Length: 128
Image 1 (tube, rainbow, N blue to C red):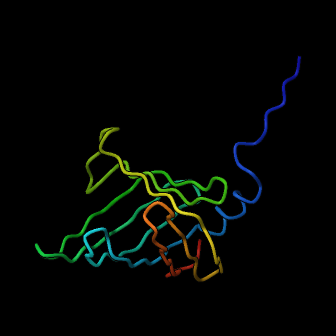
Image 2: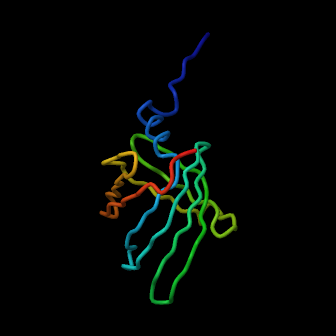
């Protein structure tokens, strides 16, 4: 008996993921109204590396984050599994999910409906 399986992601997701490969700059205010900025590099092997800088009451803090990234049903997802070189336990890992909208080769907006925020990513280098 032969059983056919559907591909794990729709073709629109595969196309969008291919377009997102590269480095992107972002800026936003977190839930404490602190300025957050940084860059994220999305590799075609499904891994990301980000440098995030937060300027708050206790001064400037920089974090280096990495883990897998996905696109499923038009949602852009980052799963932070390593922070500043330290592997995070399953309860410490963070997940970021937003709906991709307004995509162009140099910029895309991503909305997080739960947090009621829109994040703008601007390309800083082309995919290699």
